[in-house]
Image (cartoon, rainbow, N blue to C red; front, side, top):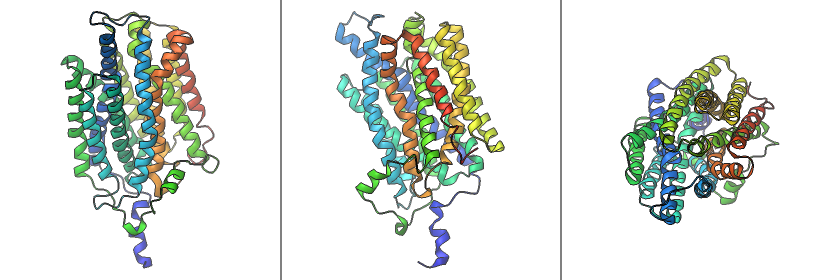
Amino acid sequence: MPSHALPAAFAPFAEPKSKVPPRWIALFATAWLGIWMAQLTPVQLLLPQQIDNLLIASRGATQTLQSDAWVSSVIAFGIISGIAGACALIAYPLTGALSDRTTSRYGRRRPWILVGTVVFAVSLVALGFQATMVGIGVFWSLTIVGFCIVSAAITATISDQVPVRQRGFVSGWVSAPQAVGTVLGLLLVLILGLGQLVGYSLMAVLLVILALPFLIFTTDEVLPKVLRSPFKLSTLLKGFWINPVAHPDFGWTLLGRILVNLGNALGTTLLLYFLMYGLNRGASAQDDLLVLTMIYLVFFIIAALGFGRLSDRLGRRKMFVYLAAYLQGIAALLIAFVPDLTIAEVGAGLLGLGYGCYMAVDQALATQVLPSSHTRGKDLGIMNIATAVPQAVAPLLGAFVVASLGGFTALFVASAIFAVLGGLAVIPIKSVK
């Protein structure tokens, strides 16, 4: 190959230098709004309700879930989420690895964004038709596979196209739509009184509408076939293991992300059950959940965008991760030891502030500790596992803690412990301040 051709040929692996424009960020944020709404609205409301309704029907049309039987619902939810989490363990790094090797004329990431969006949307609609636990488990797992494919591909565009000095702010636009999408999805389902099928179908339609503009109106660097790594299954499987001794900063970032996200998931995925059975607010629990989510939304957005940009300007990430983890721990402890709705509202604000800061800054941090520019998609896919899997296992783990280790107080104490440990895990990182 002529030497003068090397710079252009290696452009897909080059570190980006030019800032992405506001139009790119707007399309990026819009796509994430659709992705988060389609994933989190089912997790927070539609899927637990679907499982509850199925369990109620199995007990008799006139019988409802009793306060001592709610654990069975959470366990069913946890098992289904755990199966989906196992699928995410494979889908995230596999999608990333395949997109790293994709030589389509449309780029490396865009074909996978399209595939993921289609699988995600179709699976959501199919999920709405399910009336058995097996059916729910199968199609929720397919839904999560679609979510993993699209989110792995679009996350990789940060490392591909966004320079380091802009990544905190851009990562904030991954995080802020997460809170907006959750609230918007809940509002649409609750205010419009949508049923199971219509609720899932609406999320699918909004996903497609909001994700496609990014796919259509942004560009993606094409990988020349001559630069594509050979595809060998053995090499691919070996690539899923990144030696933490050889790449300690990656290992510590991954560990911290697992711990903080597990702490956050323990404190949020059973929130509806906490309101219903911990605070005995069964009749108003859904409305209370919406209020808490709205408070969380406001502080989450402020933190994600504000602290993300501030970390860019200061050139520092770790201090913000510490702060974020400890704020989440304080929020969980408040709810643990003062089980009151007003305190829960204060906790929601602190949790939003902490997790919003964490999601923006830690995402930027993760892009700066990747082992190789040639495997960004696969490596970020592994990082994304640390977000999806804790959310999948938290309902089952949380149900065990509540049922066996001290009720909701123990649940929120565990949430605080995991969050604080996650903050401590970034201390050994050396390559990023």
